Length: 399
Image 1 (tube, rainbow, N blue to C red):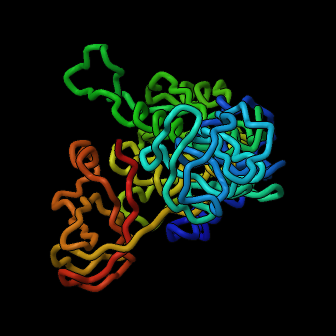
Image 2: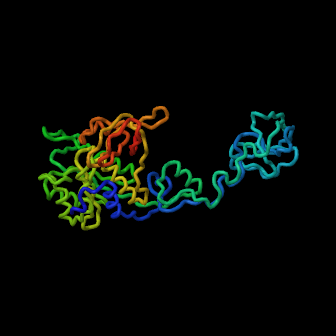
Image 3: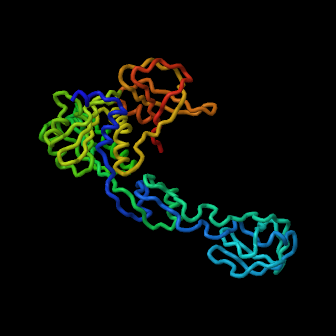
């Protein structure tokens, strides 16, 4: 097991992801695709717009006839174009989004024109004014979205503009979240004198769902080996995430329970702070298992570092962490032998992105994590840094 213990964050994540494959593909209605990951490219079947269109309400005419007073010969509205052709000395009333009639090559906006009965007086108007060209958004054959793209409302709109009513996406991974420990109790139950409320599993479930997975939060399990084994055995999931019991103390039974179900360990521990006891493996029936520490901050940090990439790869999505660069707002001491991911706060000052780590990084503090909007990455044995030095940060999703 020595080659599985105290792996670097990058090595541990790579070993975990090597055991993950995208889930099967299914077709869903476009509206049901929000948060899902495309399993196919979306290509434009026709030009958008499919005709030259007006960008404003006004008058369609020949630029050669402006300035002048022109005869009004018809109207072009969205969905109801003018069927004739605009000839010399003629104009057609037109509305935003409507097709520009044959013969016309410019639009005079209504504020610049003066209508009197069946005639309209217009100023000079260069060809192309207020004209949206055919295919100006995208021409036929354009790849609008590529496989691996996660659908949001704007990408959904793009797929809809291509005429798609449904799209192919990867199945949502089923993730079972299991808290262990005699000290854990679920609200609104009254805790005993030595118990605490379960704050880790509820948040992890929401995180998983925010990444596109289906989360099932199971009831906390007492510190009895058979109880933990039964909880793991009964979890209907592609991935089981345990919270607590991941270390090697007398009451840490999660690994032993996994071994009873044929666990093949791929990562035994990680050289990271917080989160050293994190482990990962494959159960005998093929389900994946990620063991997270019980302290909430440790669990949340390791969820960002490992759970998120796993859930995304199961959907065929991007596995990389969305890292950014920021300048330190204050000096920092040298780091120790473990890579440290510090809860931090981002701000923009004088046009620059600054990061300020919280002074208290105790892994049990939920208040600090709730206030943080980034994780500041400090490599193992990193030297002391001065204010203004550039560091890596992982921005956290905040509403």
